[in-house]
Image 1: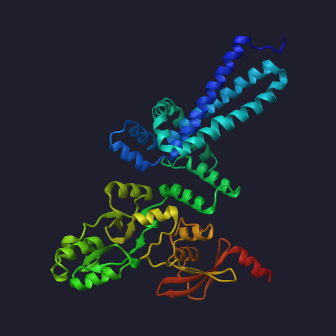
Image 2: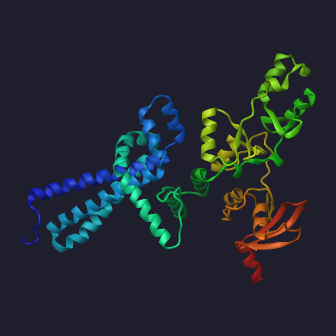
Image 3: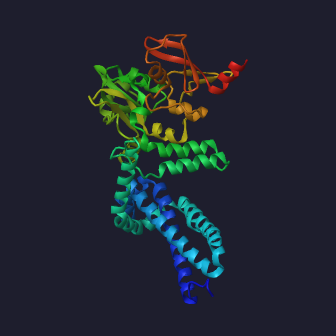
Length: 435
């Protein structure tokens, strides 16, 4: 027959080759999901326990651009080759109509068995899957390293030709935005609710945030003068909603220790309640200082490895800027955590007319999360900072501004600090205009 392009034995070989290529495609797809979803802290702990597979996983995820680039390259190679072979196979079996049949057939196979199935398994068994595929993917990364580097170079040069300059340190092959887009898509389709979207997005944001963006500012810190009588220190610890409180001497920036309520309780037991006998500085923990430019993911890993939940934040000159706790980082993922001793103070007061009275010190990220807004947080961390940045001045009480479709009216200020702002969202502004 004229349409018979391959012999019977060749058809069988091509079919087997297509099956192998689909298996490889599934391996690449599942590996990408597993290695990007696995817990870095968990892999670090397993590596410390001597797990060689965890060590290989840590090597792979330490350079995500090279990892994702190699996986994408391998996945596209096998998918294109499988499609080409399938076209040849179906042309032999069905003539010119085989092109259409091959398209539908390969689309179904790739989507089901090379994308959805392996990624579903990998996301539900991330740690086991990542350690299982680590040796194979590490070999792929090594083999494709020169090609991936060349792709990155071409991408940067091409974008530069159109006026977009990308630094050498900037990743051009990242799975984060792809994952974020998938999350938003599933939410719009009803597969993911807002709470889960925010949690997944918070995990992805850890790599983009620094400690200074989520720390408790020094103006809001609860501290105790270590030179006070022991009775006063005990009284302040009892009135504090926090378990750990920094101690200072001479001036508030001179932190000499961190007092833990449980250590104070043990000391009181040891002296049978005779509080003046306690040496407060002796039972206080050594303060841990971290730079304000520390990445949030890096600080989370440091908390886990150091088994410490509390750090003081300093700038490049060693000046105290604030503090950060493990809970602060976890709240970036799961939202506000309130226990029985916390003072619940969201700082957002909605009104029936659709406006909001908001504390100036509230973080923009918290606003966006709670109200599903999209205010920018690149230039300012707090709502007050955003208004000052956009107004290019320190506003007076009663002034109003329009930025990003929102209306901001200054309700209260203390000296140069904006303490309360009335915010009118875009939808409410448009309704006011119509009336």
